[in-house]
Length: 169
Image 1 (cartoon, rainbow, N blue to C red):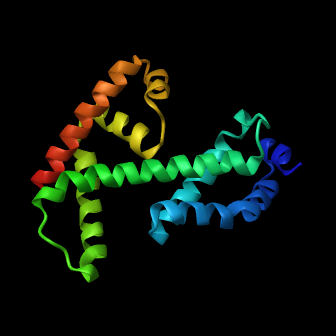
Image 2: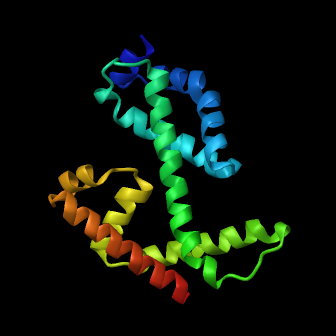
Image 3: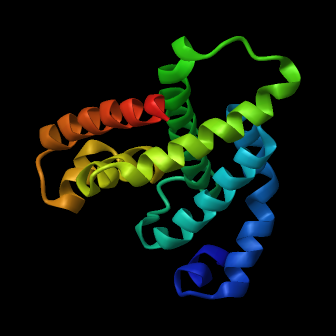
């Protein structure tokens, strides 16, 4: 009933679904991304995505299972983005004291934001769709009107360029 009302745009029903599932989804995200703020972001982005795509929910599973899959995919994409950027800088970093890790994360994230802003528009689109929005290469191809292989090759070029920019900062 709540899902149907939410599909029709009923904000109260959406809020009720949110309240019903937010704690469980946060726990899932927390287990995967381990940083509270990141988990909160993943959960919020997941609910936004779920409500936007609610029309595609086909009752093949429970709403909770469908939402859980979105949270897991968002969490994995979040970790991929972090891993991509931190692993590229790993060789150039000196050892970090435990209490400075959060500072280093903030600095690196700022470098990543700057790097993204300096990417050519096409590269920025591919990186954003793949790493931040969680689309796969087939979906990106459909969105941008390019082939799946073009999406993959552009993504790898974009990733390489982003790493170069970030390492130069």
